[in-house]
Image (cartoon, protein in one colour):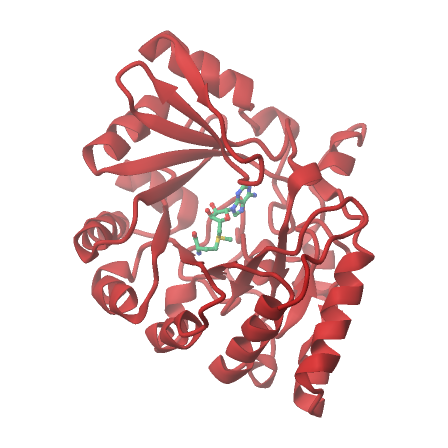
Length: 342
Ligand code: SAM
């Protein structure tokens, strides 16, 4: 086992998000607002064996946490098989998945049995008609069923992600907290980010961490911050009755200085930052027959040169607007949030 690999800001290579598909069965306004997209070519999509091999090489360089994402990860056929293959690696201490929950009810038990430890379900609204308008899907009940199935399957504490957008769901903060409380799940409010895909982003639609806390304090009284290890993206808080929740303040209080995360797209492109312009092609050496040592060197040397602070740099942009327009996303789908995985 090698020593911890650190980048130029002393951030360890520790956490990997793997997008297993760029396809999604929702069309959320803040991520995939168009009906159709330029998809990654099918032949470029990594096989389960290729993903598992990369995970093992990354684990040799210090990665301990893996999160499966997408697109919608449950659209990838036989995902439980991939979970089982990754879970066999004893170096991976935390194997999790982020899903929109539409297909979770059918798959939760098999995923848990295969070794998936934690699940985060995206739940932006409790109102079916809002989901229909905002994500172009009438399947709100399926998401709720998925959440129930995840609880029954026995995952470690369930998390619910809600991207808060002014004028869309900012009147549901307390409702979401209550829902989480009633379903033994922790809600994490996410500031609306100007990532690729969020082509309709504007600063005035972002509800800041401070504003979220002010609204919740008016309803619940004093809110106490919970000390963390500084590496998780969410800051956690506790209400007087003990209910906890998190806020991911990537827009107003970015956490680049402690970010140990990187992302692999479904076609094996490695991004060191959600905002990075370019990724590193790992599929080419993988398919050319590179040895584990060669891959490990490439990964280690690339990470040691990492200096990305994408969200902090965005903070200093005057007249901040959407990061990309739809034509530049079509020119390179790797810029899309649904390709990089959230
Ligand atoms: N399909 C899965 C899901 O919905 O959870 C996984 C992929 S999705 C890209 C991962 C996370 O990114 C979701 O929680 C989603 O809400 C979040 N996300 C997407 N676009 C975002 C944006 N513009 N700002 C903040 N979060 C965003």
